[in-house]
Image (cartoon, rainbow, N blue to C red):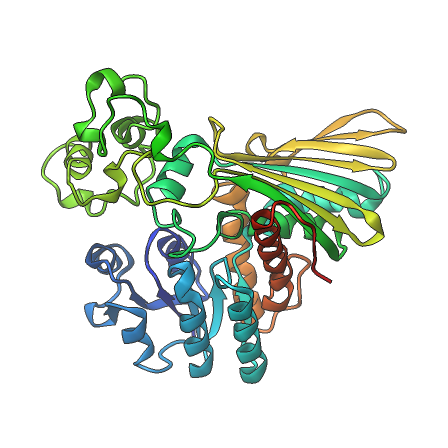
Length: 419
């Protein structure tokens, strides 16, 4: 049996993650990649065995070659998704598209139109559905053990260091260049709430703003770059880039580039990067061009007047999701990082579901990424539909909720009817 040929457009951290799954799967073969970063292309050659002639400098370049594989993973920047997805589908590729689908509702719907025209198979990377943690919660809800789910509250603890990296200094800091944070970070969460309830959302309201990461909150005597900041100021600043990238966030590599080629220690390499005037991750968090929110709440009204609430906040020490489900006959309380769910039925004793007993790999979104990849391969090879499959049409629902939440936030919290 011939292997399924797959290309990856956008070979950054997400693209490389899926590249690893493709390489390890006997059914699939990574045939080509495209990325503007020469270090990413070099990694594709050295670590993934891709021929140099199959490492392209851009999405445009690889798509200009026509259809050279069976399927494509599109892991480019948010605003590029529409163009790349439509071109790939029209060439005949089935695609797995990183979330968000696109940065406007109109663009999302345009992608859906082309999918319907071409008949291509499209899945969206709403990986939380595939995590054993949320799958088990849905199983309990569907069993009726806690009665009808009436209220869900989920908190997305972004973590102060992760928010500083991605949403203040990084690629998702400016909504005009990328997308509103409620879409970029939390369409995952809105999809999970919708999926757990199994009901249509009717209305959304939202509040939030950019509270802290702005110039008026800069410590007295601070500089626009961390390497210029006086030690007397830096020592008490948790957002100091040298602390974040050498200590707290040291396992996170997107800023590092080709560290293997640097002759010196990892710390020396990071310090050199952060001392570069042009390097974005060395900027003071109070002197960036960021405009996305650092905290937001979303209130949702579903069919049957069931309610849900999402809190997204930058101001947490750890990066994790926690959730509480209130039913007519019981409740569930859980933290995804703890890999356990406390079930509290009203008619019987409380008990704990240990998620580690249901999966051997709980890395990367609680094991969701690997399971999504496997379902995508099943999908494009004619496998039976699954309860978790995040098709394009289904994924548009959480995006519509995200855009409505941003509309409401900008209008001072006015409810938006999305029916």
